[in-house]
Amino acid sequence: MEKFLPVGQFDFRCGKHSDPLLLLSGPPSSGKTSLLFQFAINSATGSDSNVVFICNRRKLESKPPYLAQGIDPSPQVLHRIQMKYIDNEEGIKKYFAAFHMHDPAPVSVIIDDFADFFDEGNCQERYNNTRGRDLAMVRVLALCRNAILYANEKGPCQLLLSDTHNGDSPRLLYLYKRWISSIYTIKGDGSGSYLIRSSNNLGVAKSARTKLAKYSIALQYLLYEGLTEDEEQSDE
Image 1: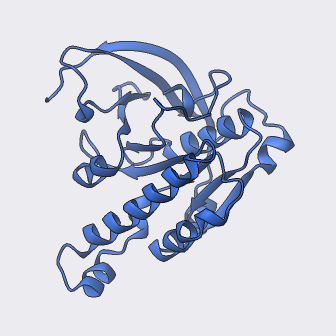
Image 2: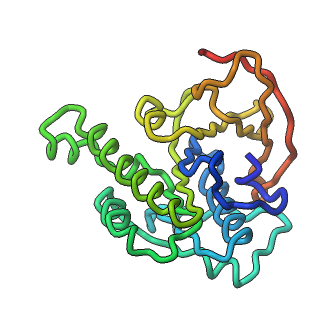
């Protein structure tokens, strides 16, 4: 959870035990884009490589991310964060189809609101299937995974996606968990703050002690409020 917040320096070199594909899912207006941008800052700070931030330009300009309070990234760090604006899943496919040409590959690729790039009507028409959107997402997730795993044969590279959900778990968990093993979920604590936890849909042992990161959004800042531990029963 610390990767999303300004809590220190991190080594973003993906080793054998690191997960190269991550998902951050949370309710609307919970600061997901701000957390992704802080992740980008941490990645660019902890590495000399670039970070690619993929998003919809109109959405980002209408609701830009908030920086963490007290954090002033250096121009060198911000310069290593490359913004890539796309409108639909075709932009994602084109980028990852040519991913092998990036030398070196970015240390992190971040896609904000991944599922929103897939228009349900267009996907159904293209695949002539009521589940066309699911099919399109699975194909792009497979492409992304193959590209990231290939890049990790030469050096560290992580892919971070975000999604929005209104319940207790990602709305498309049945799709994501096939391709992504590290899933982080955001939940309000009832007092205006939010908690980030590793999803217990990934085989966390029953009664396992889980680390939680607490933060809030106030005065146009991302405010880190500390780490805590909790015990939550797994569905496994």
